[in-house]
Length: 450
Image (cartoon, rainbow, N blue to C red):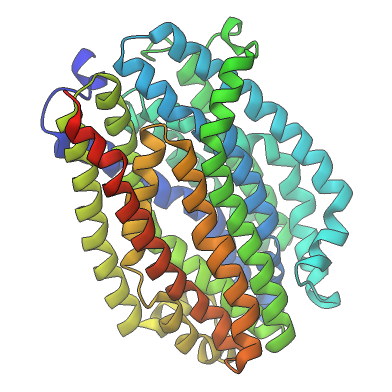
């Protein structure tokens, strides 16, 4: 138990891989919550393409929910790991308890706001009269499980940060297995259509939440969750919120990008290209999962060793994070560039949608390797508690670069291609800026510490 929870022992790369492999599996499975829905929905017959477009319109709403999971859940994980590395388990337990309280409260408030503002929000982000009915049908069910979504996503990091990534993986895998089993039953057998897909997702997220909470309250946890530590403490809430703000902004800026993309694509290309972006985002999610797995595997190792004042090991973890992510993103770009139609075919039978999307997918993924640099720099800032830089680079790539380019390039003569071209431009500029700044600041300071 001691070795399993002590990241200052053993080879650094092995600690990261032991975390990253189950985390990657868990993230792949977690993606299936939504991807499996899209695959089934896209094959619903004549209405499949429009239903897929409707689900795509819900992405900004789902992203907002994930933003709050990142703010109050994942935002406290680096602080939790640093305190564990320093031997302050009591402080770590209070961080965990406050994170649970904040996450639950956010889930309740988001549920209410979602139902109140659903209609105007969907039309504001690019819904047409035809696609709105599918988006609203999906959201009416999905919003009922908002609390489960926030808790299951935000709290699994506390399981992983204690050296139990396999437990975290199983909580996700079991939930997803429930989703996969219920999807065809609800969508086709019970003829619930898109509502059935949403209902299956809610049930599966409830199962995952129950498993995560059972572990955190249980005896196996190195730092257990208790009701006493769930009472909010102002200083802890402030610390979680400050560091979690970078995670929140990363997710919230995704929302801004999705809104800008959907509204611009609706203007220049109509529902077909909104559907193309839905599929493109789904493919991108698949290929960013291993990078996320490496990053999430490295973060508790970086934070723990920093708290334990093992600065050489902290640098080694950052370097491994960068090299592994770069190698994978090169591979991912080649696979997408060479076989774009294959990936589109996973999500739709619509030949027109595929024909319109193949070139857009190649444009979107150009320069994907620079995402590894963005993730490496951003994760190092977060893991070491550097909220200032983490927040700035969260804003830079999406708000300062992608959103303006998404709005401007189509008006400069690029048409719908301009929307997809904004992504690789932001990858190059944002990735280099984030990584080089990290090397010149927090990484450089690690070399001067003893």
